[in-house]
Image 1 (spheres, helix red, strand yellow):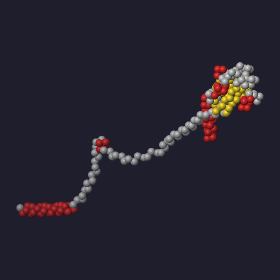
Image 2 (cartoon, rainbow, N blue to C red):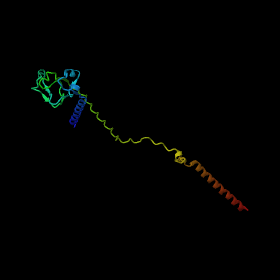
Image 3 (tube, rainbow, N blue to C red):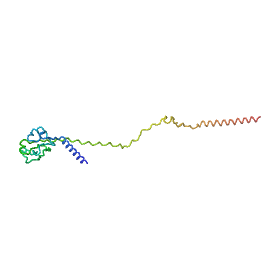
Image 4 (tube, rainbow, N blue to C red):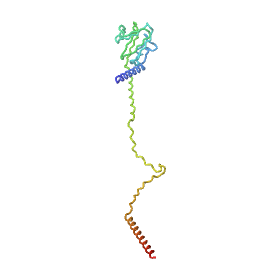
Length: 213
């Protein structure tokens, strides 16, 4: 997958560079309005121009009356088209400059090259547009929080009396009942016995007294 992605990026960059080069390519009409004729001054015409790879030359002339032959430097100097690299006589010839360096053109009709119907262009290398930077990888989405919630350890606040209907709960009776005092109990018992004896004695006296009468 990684090598495939890199190949795709490289291909896309190459296509972008090609499109950029094609977009800025210039098409020159040789001789401008005069065209390709025996009366043209092509050395002067080419001297003020900057040719580069991707540009093209359009030769306009009367079909059959002239030719456009691309030749070597030696054949250019000799005005010879016997070893022409390419030739055309259709009347409208377009030559794309595909390589850097000097390119030589002459008319192959006898006497026309020596009359000045010859052209040399110096082609510079095309400046490639900078390749676009690869897009940054999308940041991964944050992971969902799967940690369990911590238990609530906060102590609950005691319920106030007002929150329970306004009634105050009764406190349990913690009074400890003391056992009866043994001394007081025994004193009471002694007193009761003395009273009983006194009563009996009084009753006896009354009985004796009644018997005397």
